[in-house]
Length: 498
Image (tube, rainbow, N blue to C red; front, side):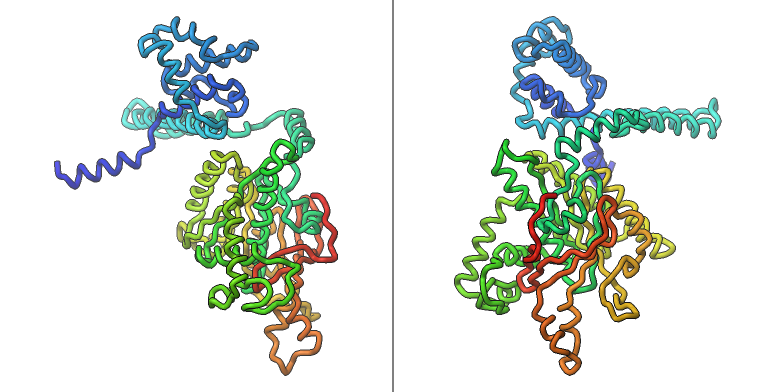
């Protein structure tokens, strides 16, 4: 057997996912024994999900103790470990202490281990069905059509059993859970940092909602998306500082930059964080707030650089992470989002919002007969991904067509979005951006009126909420300083609670 064949075999084995994880089972059992409340945080988990028979019996015994109102810890479970022959063979009470030493230190880690145990259990069942199907296929005793029917039946039953929320749940049960979520504040949307936008949309709801933020090229949609992400992260940080007094749980935010480089995204975030609305002057370089171009061209004053470094120190504590890898497919985006979910879960700040900048740069995974089929499939998958991860996805979209209407109004509407029917069908909220300065700056000087020259200096932003499934259609005004990337409230708006 050649060395190349052996190397290839080892690589294939390394890529193979194990159908059991004893380390995860031990860490979870230790966590449950250390704190019985962990049972209430790990979701539906049954003894048969464990691979090791002794682990199955330990988990069943712990659940029985807790269901009877008893404490299941190192002291109360010691007798069980000494009485079980299988446990005695692997150390008895000594193995109990080993499990406690291997316990997951955080409840969020225990939840991740429970997911691993459920996933591997499901994979074992799938593998068993596949093996039996293969054996039937190789036997002359079974008809091919009958084999297909039986395999489909078993896989369908398996899918029904392991559906994350269960299929065909009773209406009363669904209503009770919904009322409890609303009463506890879980159904309340997260604040975008723009109170008027929150008032119209109800905030960013994180239970599988898909937001669309559309604008023409260079209209400022990336600045607006990043500004909302920063506002969300600041809000989460404030919740962390409030501790138990906070009405909401802290959360994490992810931002995927498919267009902007990591360095560009970082510098723009720094100038946005360093912006002070009270600072006078609006020079592109040395005076007033430090600007993106000023930093790139090394035209900032000493105080400007100091403010950027202060912004960097502030950003270190924000629960906001970015991924600036280009040319990602939706499968890669989903895999990265799941890794980010696990990372935030370990820190106790679950992922709640994911930004994708922008949809047109998501790499295709397979060639389609027509472009519209590819785009339509992409939006359906984005909607499904938000529900699957139980987060909000804010997807930025570029408007390619001229927004001018017959009456000369340049403001965009949903019809200006490419494949607007697919977006309108899948999105829960659609916001379109309009800046008068954008069009005024593109007019030649000889065609400009006094109003155009005034508009060029304006930092007013209109956010046209053209669809809001849970809210209303309305135009919201905000402030967007393009030079720094700062997004803030319209000075005439009064803060309102979501």
